[in-house]
Image 1: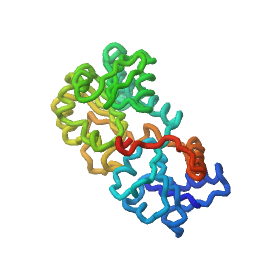
Image 2: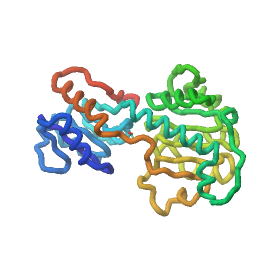
Image 3: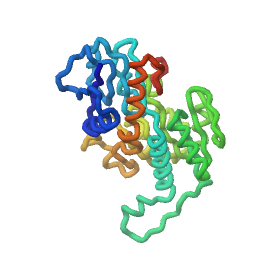
Image 4: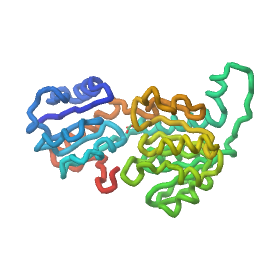
Amino acid sequence: MSVLLICTGRDPQVWVNAIREQQPDIKLYVYPEAHDPQEIKYAVTWKHPKGVFNKYPNLEVIASIGAGVDHIISDPEIPKNTLITRIIDEQLTRDMSTFILSLVLDKMRNISVHHGKKTWNPLPYQTLNDEKIGIMGLGVLGKAAAQTLSSNGFKVAGWSKSRKQIEGVSTYHGERGLQDFLKSTSILICLLPLTSETECILKKELFEQLPKGAYLINVARGEHLVEHDLLEMLDKGQLSGASLDVFRTEPLPEEHPFWKHPKVHITPHIASVTDPKKVVFQLMENYKRMLQRKPLMNIVELKKEY
Ligand code: GLV
């Protein structure tokens, strides 16, 4: 049996090297190199061409090389009965938390504003007590971000689909909890998984429930955001600014209005990127478990879509 690597938008060679280092004797094919589809039971993937997995009659597992699996689940032609796994990794989680912390501090202290100005003009800044952080999504990444911000002295609230409890964090859940959560959030951070329920959740009706002048940080997926609603809310002053790390189309097209908007701060999907060397062990461990018919780690619940 062999492993298939399908990796678009990221360099496949670093994954090949990491996999071979971990398991030198592995039979590994890198899509689209010639191979017999019958041989493939395990696929390691990032943004595969839609429908491609239909060609693999013996495929048992599709392993995402990232924390997100929306790039897999959004393919309506994923063969039934294949298991989907995701990455859960301490470094990936920590990188996300520290990235968010740096964006929050930058926003409060106007650091990039000062860098951009090249004039001696000290601006008033916000302190810890001025901001109320609200995190949407309390999975592995959201919970860690909430804890990091809380342990740095921030007032933190979290919202999730089902009830969660996190020490030091006020938690809200479900449709009913959303309104109360938004009402007292001055910096809204989206860390939700992208599912059919959360797509376009960051829209006008939601922004209007935030206090005037709130700030948005989206480090989840571009599809969470209704882009023209954000522009409208920024122009009306309902939102004071937004830091966006993810976009519907990546790289963000040159002509996109976000590039020129003075209140939109763009980073090129760098919040937290999987380090192949750190996670290849779990990918190969799952491969072995699959061959030995043992339960796999980090399986995605298809019904929940994450
Ligand atoms: C990155 O965006 C990931 O899902 O790991």
